[in-house]
Length: 248
Image 1: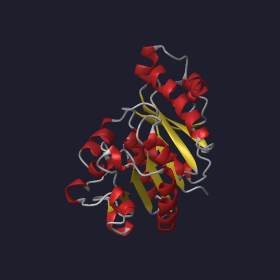
Image 2: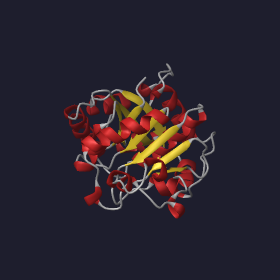
Image 3: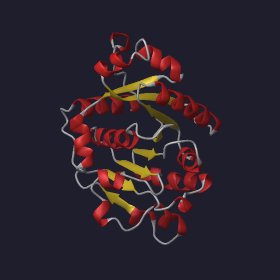
């Protein structure tokens, strides 16, 4: 089973980091030990979402520079046992090279069931670093033409980086808004436009959004948490039925 997954998007603002945090928590709920690695230099948000920001001292740049051992820069989530974070560097000048990232993740992955790497949006140097160690990718997009076009570019860049096992996460989905926009006939059309197999549809969920903003655990009955749970099951190879995309 592939255990190192990069979570990426061609466009910012699609909820990629929220998906990363929710997927990590859902894997923990399945009894797994999970490490999140934030690669969004200067703009990382996972330390806030996981309640680590106020006591975080070290980040991935400190590990790579040799200032601290990896264990000193990995912090436990404030509200989820067995969920951990290695924070992003503070500036883009400290982006880790792809080769060093591969070496670091190879070492760290020995201690966790899953490593989820939160890539910065776009396909720049930070993206290449985040993708370097990944065995598979989740491409997060909202169901609109701008985001899907960006997902196509991300898919191509992942293939060039050697990450050919890719799945699409349609995030912040609202059937009412989707129908009103009239950009696509149905979700099948979205998937066809992206050219990536679907693994999850995560609904627009104010409860999930509020929990991440407040650095709190998401109630397991929230629609977003339930969708993240199905995503986690599929990441572990379970044959969980996908939504009937034709009905949207």
